[in-house]
Image 1 (cartoon, one colour):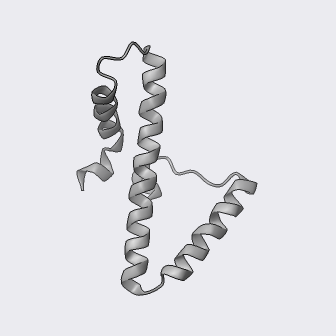
Image 2 (cartoon, helix red, strand yellow):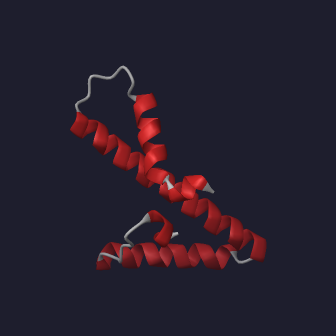
Length: 88
């Protein structure tokens, strides 16, 4: 469960490994790290949500709610939590 609470450091370590011999400047590496943290967070959230919905037999309803929320958030801007763990 440590990956859930320390997602930023996981993204930092992965970025350093992926860009070890790269000539990127610090700002570009920070952008890659931020994007990687977002992608990891989305994958974790999606996997857990779909896993629980399959367990309870509500995958179709969950998919519909997720799609509806996505469309609504695109047009309204959506709410943001202060950390990944709070969002999860």
